[in-house]
Length: 282
Image (cartoon, rainbow, N blue to C red):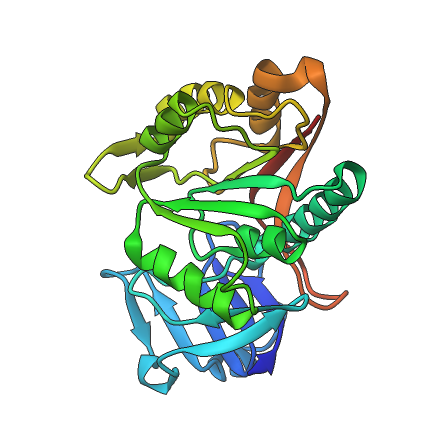
Protein backbone atom coordinates (compact mmCIF):
# COMPACT_ATOMS: atom_id res chain seq x y z
CA UNK A 1 0.00 0.00 0.00
CA UNK A 2 1.25 3.46 -0.91
CA UNK A 3 0.15 6.56 0.90
CA UNK A 4 -2.18 9.12 -0.33
CA UNK A 5 -3.99 11.13 -2.91
CA UNK A 6 -2.76 14.33 -4.54
CA UNK A 7 -4.03 16.64 -7.27
CA UNK A 8 -0.96 17.40 -9.40
CA UNK A 9 -2.41 19.73 -12.04
CA UNK A 10 -5.53 20.57 -14.02
CA UNK A 11 -6.56 22.50 -17.09
CA UNK A 12 -7.63 22.09 -20.72
CA UNK A 13 -10.59 20.04 -19.42
CA UNK A 14 -8.33 17.42 -17.78
CA UNK A 15 -7.09 16.68 -14.26
CA UNK A 16 -3.81 15.00 -13.32
CA UNK A 17 -3.96 13.07 -10.03
CA UNK A 18 -1.75 10.74 -8.02
CA UNK A 19 -3.32 7.78 -6.26
CA UNK A 20 -0.46 6.17 -4.39
CA UNK A 21 2.16 5.38 -7.06
CA UNK A 22 -0.39 5.59 -9.88
CA UNK A 23 -0.74 8.88 -11.81
CA UNK A 24 -3.86 9.33 -13.92
CA UNK A 25 -5.11 11.90 -16.40
CA UNK A 26 -8.91 12.03 -16.61
CA UNK A 27 -11.54 14.40 -18.06
CA UNK A 28 -12.61 17.38 -15.97
CA UNK A 29 -15.29 19.62 -17.44
CA UNK A 30 -14.71 22.32 -14.80
CA UNK A 31 -11.02 22.81 -15.70
CA UNK A 32 -11.51 25.52 -18.32
CA UNK A 33 -8.16 27.17 -17.46
CA UNK A 34 -4.77 26.26 -18.94
CA UNK A 35 -2.52 23.55 -17.56
CA UNK A 36 0.38 24.63 -15.35
CA UNK A 37 2.73 21.64 -15.74
CA UNK A 38 4.50 20.97 -19.02
CA UNK A 39 3.09 18.53 -21.61
CA UNK A 40 6.06 16.25 -20.86
CA UNK A 41 4.97 15.96 -17.22
CA UNK A 42 1.40 15.15 -18.25
CA UNK A 43 2.66 12.50 -20.67
CA UNK A 44 4.30 10.67 -17.75
CA UNK A 45 0.85 9.65 -16.45
CA UNK A 46 0.48 5.92 -15.84
CA UNK A 47 -2.78 5.92 -17.82
CA UNK A 48 -5.24 8.36 -19.41
CA UNK A 49 -9.02 8.10 -19.57
CA UNK A 50 -10.93 9.48 -22.58
CA UNK A 51 -14.62 10.02 -23.22
CA UNK A 52 -14.20 10.96 -26.91
CA UNK A 53 -15.40 8.11 -29.09
CA UNK A 54 -16.70 6.18 -26.10
CA UNK A 55 -15.20 5.62 -22.65
CA UNK A 56 -11.72 4.15 -22.91
CA UNK A 57 -8.39 3.98 -21.07
CA UNK A 58 -5.03 4.49 -22.77
CA UNK A 59 -2.36 2.62 -20.82
CA UNK A 60 -4.82 0.54 -18.80
CA UNK A 61 -2.46 -2.42 -19.13
CA UNK A 62 0.00 -0.49 -16.95
CA UNK A 63 -2.52 -0.26 -14.11
CA UNK A 64 -2.67 -2.92 -11.38
CA UNK A 65 -5.92 -4.86 -11.21
CA UNK A 66 -6.48 -3.37 -7.76
CA UNK A 67 -4.30 -1.29 -5.48
CA UNK A 68 -4.63 0.37 -2.09
CA UNK A 69 -4.08 3.89 -0.85
CA UNK A 70 -4.54 5.58 2.51
CA UNK A 71 -6.30 8.94 2.78
CA UNK A 72 -6.38 10.69 6.16
CA UNK A 73 -5.84 7.41 7.97
CA UNK A 74 -8.52 5.51 6.01
CA UNK A 75 -7.63 2.75 3.57
CA UNK A 76 -9.31 2.31 0.20
CA UNK A 77 -9.04 -0.37 -2.47
CA UNK A 78 -8.95 1.17 -5.95
CA UNK A 79 -9.55 -0.28 -9.38
CA UNK A 80 -10.01 1.25 -12.83
CA UNK A 81 -13.59 1.02 -14.10
CA UNK A 82 -15.09 1.36 -17.56
CA UNK A 83 -16.60 4.69 -16.52
CA UNK A 84 -13.28 6.20 -15.37
CA UNK A 85 -14.08 5.99 -11.65
CA UNK A 86 -11.65 4.33 -9.22
CA UNK A 87 -13.71 3.66 -6.09
CA UNK A 88 -12.95 6.91 -4.29
CA UNK A 89 -14.10 10.53 -4.54
CA UNK A 90 -11.31 12.56 -2.85
CA UNK A 91 -13.36 15.77 -3.03
CA UNK A 92 -15.33 14.32 -0.09
CA UNK A 93 -12.30 14.35 2.24
CA UNK A 94 -13.50 17.42 4.19
CA UNK A 95 -16.91 15.82 4.66
CA UNK A 96 -15.37 12.54 5.87
CA UNK A 97 -13.38 14.45 8.51
CA UNK A 98 -16.52 16.29 9.62
CA UNK A 99 -18.50 13.04 9.84
CA UNK A 100 -15.86 11.58 12.14
CA UNK A 101 -15.90 14.70 14.30
CA UNK A 102 -19.68 14.93 14.72
CA UNK A 103 -20.11 11.19 15.33
CA UNK A 104 -17.38 11.18 17.97
CA UNK A 105 -18.93 14.27 19.59
CA UNK A 106 -22.36 12.66 19.61
CA UNK A 107 -21.07 9.55 21.39
CA UNK A 108 -19.36 11.72 24.01
CA UNK A 109 -22.50 13.83 24.56
CA UNK A 110 -25.16 11.10 24.65
CA UNK A 111 -23.13 8.11 25.78
CA UNK A 112 -24.24 5.96 22.86
CA UNK A 113 -23.15 5.49 19.25
CA UNK A 114 -24.75 7.71 16.65
CA UNK A 115 -27.12 5.88 14.31
CA UNK A 116 -26.00 6.83 10.79
CA UNK A 117 -27.73 6.14 7.48
CA UNK A 118 -25.61 6.47 4.32
CA UNK A 119 -27.64 6.53 1.10
CA UNK A 120 -26.31 6.16 -2.46
CA UNK A 121 -23.30 5.04 -0.48
CA UNK A 122 -20.99 3.92 -3.34
CA UNK A 123 -17.70 2.44 -2.08
CA UNK A 124 -18.31 3.61 1.47
CA UNK A 125 -16.12 6.61 2.26
CA UNK A 126 -18.75 8.16 4.53
CA UNK A 127 -19.62 4.75 5.98
CA UNK A 128 -15.98 4.21 6.93
CA UNK A 129 -15.71 7.68 8.46
CA UNK A 130 -18.77 7.14 10.67
CA UNK A 131 -17.82 3.60 11.68
CA UNK A 132 -14.26 4.62 12.55
CA UNK A 133 -15.78 7.22 14.90
CA UNK A 134 -17.79 4.51 16.66
CA UNK A 135 -21.16 4.99 14.97
CA UNK A 136 -23.69 2.30 14.07
CA UNK A 137 -24.06 2.55 10.30
CA UNK A 138 -26.57 1.45 7.69
CA UNK A 139 -25.02 1.52 4.18
CA UNK A 140 -27.47 1.53 1.25
CA UNK A 141 -26.73 1.32 -2.47
CA UNK A 142 -28.64 -0.16 -5.40
CA UNK A 143 -25.48 -1.78 -6.83
CA UNK A 144 -24.45 -5.09 -5.29
CA UNK A 145 -20.99 -4.67 -6.79
CA UNK A 146 -20.50 -1.32 -5.04
CA UNK A 147 -21.77 -2.69 -1.71
CA UNK A 148 -19.31 -5.58 -2.03
CA UNK A 149 -16.53 -3.06 -2.75
CA UNK A 150 -17.49 -1.03 0.32
CA UNK A 151 -17.38 -4.18 2.46
CA UNK A 152 -13.84 -4.84 1.23
CA UNK A 153 -12.90 -1.30 2.26
CA UNK A 154 -14.42 -1.90 5.69
CA UNK A 155 -12.30 -5.05 6.07
CA UNK A 156 -9.17 -3.11 5.05
CA UNK A 157 -9.88 -0.77 7.96
CA UNK A 158 -10.55 -3.48 10.53
CA UNK A 159 -14.28 -2.74 10.60
CA UNK A 160 -15.61 -6.13 9.52
CA UNK A 161 -16.96 -6.84 13.02
CA UNK A 162 -18.40 -3.36 13.59
CA UNK A 163 -22.15 -2.69 13.51
CA UNK A 164 -22.60 -1.93 9.80
CA UNK A 165 -25.72 -3.06 7.94
CA UNK A 166 -25.05 -3.62 4.23
CA UNK A 167 -28.19 -3.10 2.13
CA UNK A 168 -28.61 -3.56 -1.64
CA UNK A 169 -31.87 -1.78 -2.45
CA UNK A 170 -33.56 1.15 -4.12
CA UNK A 171 -33.12 4.09 -1.74
CA UNK A 172 -36.72 5.31 -1.81
CA UNK A 173 -38.18 1.85 -1.26
CA UNK A 174 -35.74 1.26 1.60
CA UNK A 175 -36.69 4.55 3.28
CA UNK A 176 -40.39 3.79 2.98
CA UNK A 177 -39.82 0.40 4.58
CA UNK A 178 -37.75 1.91 7.41
CA UNK A 179 -40.51 4.46 8.04
CA UNK A 180 -43.11 1.70 8.34
CA UNK A 181 -40.80 -0.04 10.81
CA UNK A 182 -40.55 3.24 12.78
CA UNK A 183 -36.76 3.26 12.61
CA UNK A 184 -34.90 6.53 13.09
CA UNK A 185 -31.37 7.83 12.51
CA UNK A 186 -29.32 10.59 14.10
CA UNK A 187 -27.32 11.44 10.97
CA UNK A 188 -28.45 10.84 7.39
CA UNK A 189 -25.94 11.19 4.56
CA UNK A 190 -26.83 11.18 0.88
CA UNK A 191 -24.90 11.79 -2.34
CA UNK A 192 -27.53 11.18 -5.02
CA UNK A 193 -26.62 10.76 -8.69
CA UNK A 194 -28.03 13.00 -11.40
CA UNK A 195 -29.62 9.88 -12.86
CA UNK A 196 -29.65 6.35 -11.58
CA UNK A 197 -31.39 2.99 -11.57
CA UNK A 198 -32.51 1.08 -8.49
CA UNK A 199 -31.86 -2.55 -7.74
CA UNK A 200 -34.96 -3.55 -9.75
CA UNK A 201 -34.66 -0.97 -12.52
CA UNK A 202 -36.31 1.93 -10.68
CA UNK A 203 -35.47 5.29 -12.27
CA UNK A 204 -34.03 8.16 -10.19
CA UNK A 205 -33.85 11.70 -11.64
CA UNK A 206 -32.42 14.13 -9.13
CA UNK A 207 -34.41 17.20 -10.22
CA UNK A 208 -37.70 15.33 -9.76
CA UNK A 209 -36.93 12.86 -6.99
CA UNK A 210 -34.71 14.73 -4.54
CA UNK A 211 -37.38 16.96 -2.88
CA UNK A 212 -39.75 14.05 -2.05
CA UNK A 213 -36.73 12.00 -0.97
CA UNK A 214 -35.76 14.70 1.54
CA UNK A 215 -39.34 14.80 2.83
CA UNK A 216 -39.14 11.06 3.43
CA UNK A 217 -35.75 11.47 5.15
CA UNK A 218 -37.34 14.04 7.45
CA UNK A 219 -39.63 11.32 8.80
CA UNK A 220 -36.64 9.17 9.82
CA UNK A 221 -34.72 11.79 11.83
CA UNK A 222 -34.34 10.79 15.49
CA UNK A 223 -35.47 12.86 18.50
CA UNK A 224 -31.76 13.55 19.23
CA UNK A 225 -30.58 14.35 15.70
CA UNK A 226 -27.13 15.23 14.48
CA UNK A 227 -28.37 16.35 11.10
CA UNK A 228 -28.26 15.69 7.37
CA UNK A 229 -25.37 15.89 4.90
CA UNK A 230 -26.46 16.36 1.28
CA UNK A 231 -23.87 16.42 -1.49
CA UNK A 232 -24.05 15.95 -5.24
CA UNK A 233 -22.13 16.37 -8.50
CA UNK A 234 -25.02 17.68 -10.61
CA UNK A 235 -23.87 21.03 -12.11
CA UNK A 236 -27.34 22.59 -11.97
CA UNK A 237 -27.60 21.96 -8.21
CA UNK A 238 -25.23 24.53 -6.74
CA UNK A 239 -24.45 24.80 -3.01
CA UNK A 240 -27.18 27.46 -2.75
CA UNK A 241 -29.66 25.07 -4.38
CA UNK A 242 -28.76 22.42 -1.80
CA UNK A 243 -29.07 25.03 0.96
CA UNK A 244 -32.57 25.96 -0.12
CA UNK A 245 -33.67 22.32 -0.29
CA UNK A 246 -32.48 21.61 3.25
CA UNK A 247 -33.76 24.98 4.51
CA UNK A 248 -37.29 24.17 3.38
CA UNK A 249 -37.16 20.69 4.88
CA UNK A 250 -35.20 21.24 8.12
CA UNK A 251 -34.03 24.83 8.44
CA UNK A 252 -36.16 26.16 11.28
CA UNK A 253 -34.69 23.55 13.64
CA UNK A 254 -30.95 24.05 13.15
CA UNK A 255 -28.12 25.65 11.21
CA UNK A 256 -27.06 25.24 7.58
CA UNK A 257 -23.57 25.25 6.09
CA UNK A 258 -22.95 24.90 2.36
CA UNK A 259 -20.01 25.08 -0.02
CA UNK A 260 -18.15 23.60 -2.95
CA UNK A 261 -16.33 20.31 -2.71
CA UNK A 262 -12.82 20.57 -4.13
CA UNK A 263 -9.94 18.41 -5.29
CA UNK A 264 -6.73 19.75 -3.76
CA UNK A 265 -3.00 19.30 -4.07
CA UNK A 266 0.01 21.28 -2.90
CA UNK A 267 -0.45 24.95 -2.00
CA UNK A 268 0.55 26.18 -5.47
CA UNK A 269 -1.77 23.78 -7.32
CA UNK A 270 -5.09 25.22 -8.46
CA UNK A 271 -7.95 23.41 -6.74
CA UNK A 272 -10.75 21.89 -8.84
CA UNK A 273 -14.42 22.45 -7.92
CA UNK A 274 -16.14 19.07 -7.82
CA UNK A 275 -19.76 19.41 -6.77
CA UNK A 276 -21.56 20.97 -3.84
CA UNK A 277 -22.52 20.06 -0.28
CA UNK A 278 -24.79 21.33 2.45
CA UNK A 279 -24.97 20.30 6.11
CA UNK A 280 -28.08 20.72 8.20
CA UNK A 281 -26.86 20.54 11.78
CA UNK A 282 -29.63 20.14 14.32
